[in-house]
Amino acid sequence: MTPEENVDVRRYLAAIGQSKRLILLILFLVTGTVVAISLILPDKYEAGTSIVIEEDGSALGSTDPQTTVRRLNTTRELITSRTVLEQAASKLPGESADSLEGSVTAEVNPDADIVDVTATSEDPRRAAAIANTVTDTFLAERARDEVRRITRARQQLQDELDRLETLPGTQAQTAALRDRISQLSVQELGAGTDMQVVGKAEPPSSPSSPRPFRNAVLAAFGALFLGVLIALGRDQLSPRLRNPRELGRLLDLRVLAGVPYIRGSRRRARRLMTGAEAEAYQTLRAALEVSVPPERGATILVTGAVHGEGKTTVTWRLGNGLARAGHRTLLLSADLRVPRLHMLAQSYGEIGVGDLLVAMDLEGDVLEPDLIRQATFEVLPAGSGMRGEGCLHVIATGAEYKDPGSLVSGPSMGMLLNQIKALDYDYILVDAPPLLGIADSQVMARHVDHIILVNRLDRLSLDNVAGLREIIDGLDTPILGVVVIGARGEASPYYLSRRPPLLSEAEAPR
Image 1 (cartoon, rainbow, N blue to C red):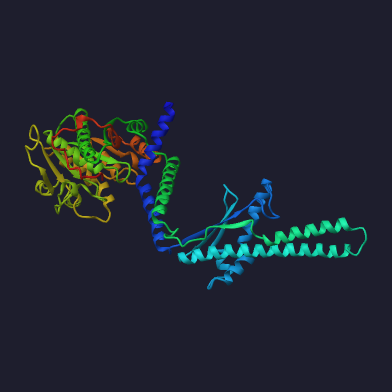
Image 2: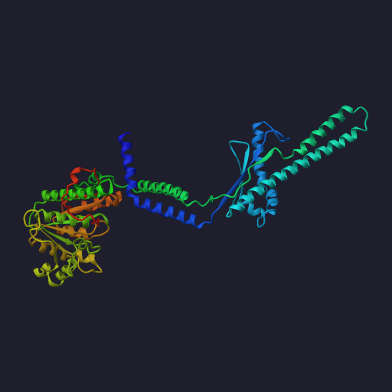
């Protein structure tokens, strides 16, 4: 396999993995619908019998293959002809030619000179009765037709014999006619014997349809095939990013860390996932310490491109990592539109960022220190870190506002950040809204020292990346790099340490 083919296979597998929820939804919907319909439909029973056609023994006998095939097809058509069905319906109470047309089929057996007759009914005994009656009716009607044909031929020969007997010198002709009449008499006695029934139809013990299990299996395979086609089609119409390196190249940014998915058994995968995530956030914390050495009031805006990429979770976990490493850290929930940080921190104070902005608009350029302390929620007290006097504080969003965009984009946001910078914190992480389609983060970016982007591979399209690149190119604030959520990594024994994870596994990207 060439490298190009290997890349394509990985891309297709990634596209299927990114659309697994859609594939599972299609699988459950299609399979569930088919099973429900199968359970609702009434049971159908099939009973069948067969007619074997002998090569010899009648005037129709022939060893020519084409003649045999034509004879079998003719027999098949005659069995389900209107005439035969009408005569059979007269012997079956409650049936008509129309009802028998929908329940009786005849098929030529490809391996023998046999025509199979099958009848379908909701009653197994009824199905057997229909198959036997139609078969017997066809054979009886065919025998009568054969007798009538032979009788007409014999009568014509007899009339010719009577005429020749009155003429002189016709002894040889009359003898031949008498011999032919004798042959026809013999054929009349054996009319219809070239076709025989092979076993009578018996009532079936189980229904032929519906079969919920079989239908469910077939529907599941069909739904999986359809789901995979849709996933691959979506990937072709809207290509997705394959790996963190490609995202970093398109954005022209450094990849600070990648939070991986790790395959394995369920129990092992959960341990590996916790260890791998912890190491990823430790890597992010170390990269931040190198890029922005601890200093009083370093403000870092954490944002993404679209909703649901994990920026809030990264803010929360990075803050925990910094605090445990001995840094005084403050988390500021500045996403007033879809706040989530207070849920992770479990801080539900009455005063938050919105309230501080409103108070600053009313009171002037400076807030009372007591008001900021009142809005600050302590998650990790001072001295909780592994070294130094690290702590973790959170200022939640506060009350909801009808127009959060104007509140965050106003001059009060810059003044609030400047006042918070003067507090005794090494790092101030600002959880901000996404950049695409919302101006909040672009305005706040003017008031912070650095920016960290958080992007999730399965949430971004190439159009999103292009739009994000245009926005960050217009920002003056330095961008430290990008944290990639959804990077795939290999399992490693280094992730199997027994030390407690940095955070709970239950925290999902926000």
